[in-house]
Amino acid sequence: MPIAHPYRDLRVIDARAPRFNQAAVGLLSLAGVLTGWWPLFAVPALQLALGLAFGRRWCLPCVFYFEVIQPRFGEGPLEDSRPVRFANRVGLVFLSAATLAGALGWGSLALVLGGLVAALALLAATTGLCVGCLLFKGLARLRGTPLSDTVAAFAATVCVDCQALPVRAHPPRP
Image (cartoon, rainbow, N blue to C red; front, top):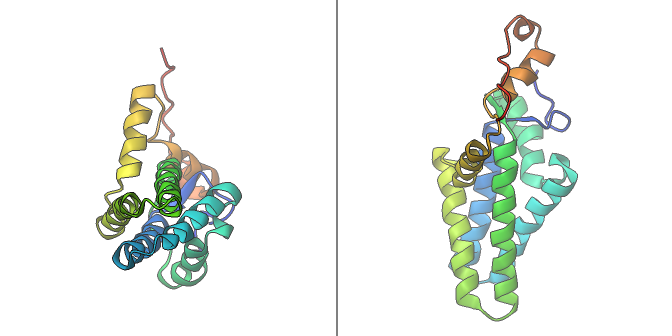
């Protein structure tokens, strides 16, 4: 039984779920690059847009992960979902730009943008190195936004064992 409900507990996410989604986005984008058929970039863009706007239930790779894979292999480690959402927004912008470029007849630009998404999404899926997540974390540090306690605070509210653990308070921002 997972600690975090995949569709209601949106502050955290099973760390393997974004990797699964990145694999789907990366493979579809790679197919668009290899075939030169830019409309394929619209498919993962639409999925990212639906997931961001309406939640994980609207993201087909997410639903497949949470309904088929997670029940068989168990919940992975939980992580803060904010960097993942930011990375999805970046992917959406680039895939939308690739789709628009293709529609305007700028095929080379569409392939470059789609190829960039394919490369970064497949890198994240295979190694766990998410450039969009790193960008979010860097921007959060610059803004003084706390990141480290989201998972601990969530766990403390749902897990009896975790409730006994102290959750570190963040110092006030200057």
